[in-house]
Length: 469
Image (tube, rainbow, N blue to C red; front, side):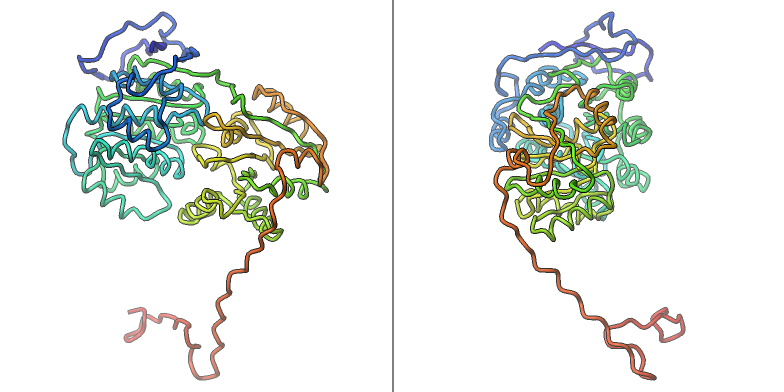
């Protein structure tokens, strides 16, 4: 399906494109201008009709994706033809499959062998959770074509990641920081990358990863296929397009400020005295609820308070180790915790099925954060609701943010036990009180002249025969 071509209109660093690629002259609007937004409404189609190989079609069907989403139907004709692609769609629109399929197909068609420490394709993402999720989406498609996928991010031991790279892999999904570390240690090279993808490119820019992204892309071979997917196309993304994509085709499937038609927006104005009780009511439903807080401490405290009130909740923020983050996200996904209390670390890329309600306990400071937080519900055509809790001194700032987000929420003044809260949450769930974790017994104090208590450690002295030797 045709899209908009975009070219920087200036010399690039001797990047030679494969002669098999179709050449299309850049349009006048593409000469040195920002990325053009062209909203497409692709006709209903199938993966088979788009040219996706049968093994991948079968893998997609097993994964619950039997027919292409609009962003997939729009971009696949260009990406499967080997073109550089710039794809924009709102969060939850299916962008991962849109780049996973052409990546796996391109590697299959090239037929090149794996090289030790040199992945054949690279997908850069901004967060650890998104890296794991993207790898999980690509893995069954890659297996269908006999390919290997490895994910690389911080917060965990690098040993298994190094071992996987040493064996040779086809698709590497990575966060920029850990990947640069592994390259500097000599565990990875990017000289065999045939396909490079930037996922959530605007968030990579927001988090300050652009310098690292540029350093990594500079290490990939000229002439490879490059795809960039993002929820928004702003100036930071535009800079990446100009530098690294060659005559890309731009596909946008909805306006930049669009929100799903199945998503309800509400603002609840509360007093400071009532806020905690109103938030507890919002978290008391039987369905999954995601609460957003501004700070790590606030998220941890709210999750703890909800648990003491019989509402199973877990927290997700940057102060947790990766194993704790994985465990808490798994508890939310499997239903053992109905409530996830998160900072903005969860606003991008985290997909948990059937989140019925998103609550901005602390309103975001800018409209992009609001849209990305809210995008955790009403995904892939499902229904959902978003509530912003507003204190009196936040009203003006929230009004500005909502206007910039282009939404018209239903506004109400709410008190604890309000019927309008119950209308969103449904009947409250029965309280669940968990037994406190057992406390390890304290070591007994040592008796005078008898050395340390059993179970305690002797301080190292560094003298012969001591532990410090």
